[in-house]
Amino acid sequence: MKALGPILAVVAAIIALWYAAAVPMNIAEVLTQAERAGAVVEPEGAMNRRDVSRFVLVLRNTEHLAESWSMERARLPAPHQIAKELWVSTWDEEVNGRRGIVKSGSLSNRSLIYHGSITLSATIVGFLIGSGLGILLAVGIVHSKTMDMSVMPWAIVSQTIPIVALAPMIIVVLYSIGVEGLLPKAVISAYLSFFPVVVGMVKGLRSPDAMQTDLLRTYSASKPQAFWMLRLPASVPYLFASLKIGIAASLVGAIVGELPVQRGGLGARMLGGSYYGQTEQLWAALLFAAALAAILVWLIGWIEAKTLRRMGVTP
Amino acid sequence: MSLVLLAVAVWIGAWAFNGWLANGRFSGFASVHLAVPLIFGATVIVVWELIVRGLAVPQVILPPPSTIVGAFFDNFGILWPDFVQTFAKGALGGYAIGCGAALLTAILVDRYDFLRRGLLPVGNFMAALPIVGTAPILVMWFGFDWQSKAAVVVVMVFFPMLVNTVAGLRDTSAMQRDLMRTYGAGYWQTLFKLRFPAALPFIFNGLKIATTLALIGAIVAEFFGSPTRGLGFRISTSVGALALDVVWAVIVVAALTGTAFYGAVAWLERRMTFWHPSQRK
Image (cartoon, rainbow over all chains, first blue to last red; front, side, top):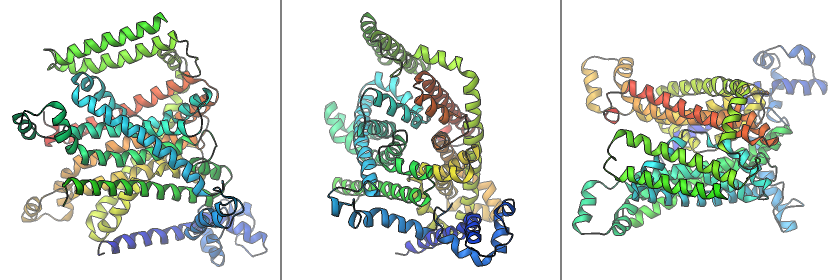
């Protein structure tokens, strides 16, 4: 628990900074609104204020500052506004809303749970395909010298390439041959998680040192036996490290894959929020995606801890 | 159909040749280590060309490599401004600001143990998040031009760089620090003469991770709005017009840029950390 203190202090500092930043970020809109409502604002008229620095506006209109934390469609919504939006678009929408799961029996298409589940299913399917293929390729690379020398350099080079640039094309091409919905996004997710898993898994399968492989040779172990009893168990820590990178990349892939075709999902929700200036919606979707990423990475870490304990790597 | 059969034959032939090279008596040569992946890459491109032509795959699904190369040279005049906009302005600007800020923050974090214990878990957490999602917000704040792309890049590269640098600054032994103390070195002297050079391998690791992130950030941010140039803008408009050969040409530009950027940082690393065991030949 001693470790928690500094973390909480830093988080509290970030939130305090956020509230402080919201004042100058929103001041211009706040003053326009206050002036329309009949308040005296210094200097008068939106045109006159346009060229005045935000900080000067803050200093000269101290009585209006509190309103910048309750603006609608603010440039920077305050944390409590985003928290409220998160609550409204998850629990409130599903339980009390007309289209929510309690009243209509299916998830509301205005709730983040609905959009999050779309993104999550594409992420998981893509991640399973990508990491499965990655592990298979890694096994091939370790066992075939030809594959190792031909494919491995390209797998390493591919990590320096912004693969995500392919995403819009994959979506549109698959759409034009009639594949739509979950699969195109899953393809992008799979693609993004594939290469980190290949590289990490090859490293892991090669991690047994000469002493260990020599020992198995003195036992006259066959190649499959050496694989199942030495290489595969030795690769597990490396595998989990790259799976964590892979699932985070998969989520990014699914979100980016939702940008070109607006059929629901957190990416579509973010783009919609930015088109219509619904900043609270945008921030809520972003935080929801962040929470999703954190849960997925934590889940893999949890499975890792369990597996390593079962294998006897950690006590 | 004969083209498809030819593709299969080329594939088998090249694979067998590579197998002979890799497992034969020349496999130890450095030139073979360079040739085998190049032959493999060339085979993939030839097979792609033959299959696309043999099966008459429509242009809007997969253009053959020859068309892509043609599109690359035909559109060089628009690809160059795109490259300048996305890489030279957005990605490089953000990369310099983000990595510089992370470096300074890391020195601060390293100095105060409280900050290290508080900020580092938060930084580790942030490094795993889909930060690219901040792109629409930053585009809203900084406008459509390269400033917003640079801002996305700053946010993306900051945390991986911070975490790596802080880890690097702690990578000196008590013996080495004690030696500095016996020399009467102060904090700053110890920092610049011992700990900063010792941290360089870690810093370069962060810088290398950040190269890819910078390009991803700059390209994806353009999907949320950009002036009428930029690699991401070109991809999204060309996809909309089903000009897939142009899209592939842009992807070639992005791939070459990413590899060259990474290669440049790796070259700098070799020059500056020649003393480190991992760089010795």
